[in-house]
Image 1: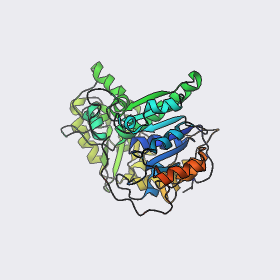
Image 2: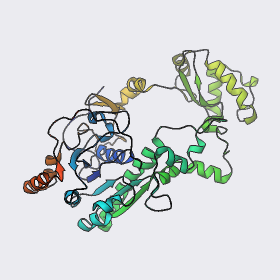
Image 3: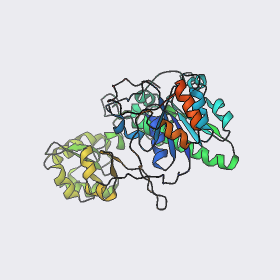
Image 4: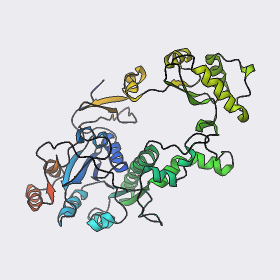
Length: 406
């Protein structure tokens, strides 16, 4: 597996400077995307008590923190905001993921930051948005996806809504859309000379990701009974089936010609089956498909399909790392001993890279501030006052902490 480790920034966002106020979930994901694309990102971590959320207990393995430096700032210290605002003077964008009003109380809200840098793009990441009756409500991905209407559509017929991975709210509807918004605002600012606030809410973003399905419901072409539509596990030709060896096969043969190929691969006679789109017969057809798929192993089926009929093996994570196609495309890289997806998408002229491992909080406090043009005297003054902290030793594994609702 290739190692993508080097020096210097590259990528289409090289030269863009971003201040990330440390948070969890979508904020770090947004910062990772920008850093992956070449932006210089400095993460402002807590001076004391910084910890990880989730199964990771080692800052060096927190993939979403890759590609950037970390400084440790006590934002409750009288001079903590001063340090952040000094960074903001030279930044193109700032990312924060607190609940509405928190950064204002800390002295690093939009008005504070735009006062020192009128061209700044101020990116805000919340669950419910900066206003509205639920703006101060607490929540996590599951709550935002529920509020957007998306969770009600995920799951099998007759079963409760299925809790998905935190992809729809945190990462797709949250961090990825905030990154898009920040890049768009930076482009606009280069024309207008003005900065602005980007208000990204995970409820709004999750709803946007499901734009097609909201449209289907509005047009009356989607059954709101979960698990009864073509792409929600309702149809026999768009589902997963267990194989002889206890693994799984994914089938997505929606189009008529793919469906015909699927029946050929399964060895089923079309004349013996109801029409493909006879919804009343779907349960019976599913039983037939399931019984047939159980007669061979997963790999036997994929070899038999040979890339036809939208038939694929359901790969475990570690299997995906070594699949020949993913290896050929270098879809995954190894950085600091941790296998992870490489930056995406790919650029023909300004290639991206991961040029440093995830930092320990405060690891680069002096170095990063100096690189951003802060004088040594001022850095020393902040450090002596306790507003900033330099981490000189590798910390022990971070204790597990519950996620702070955002």
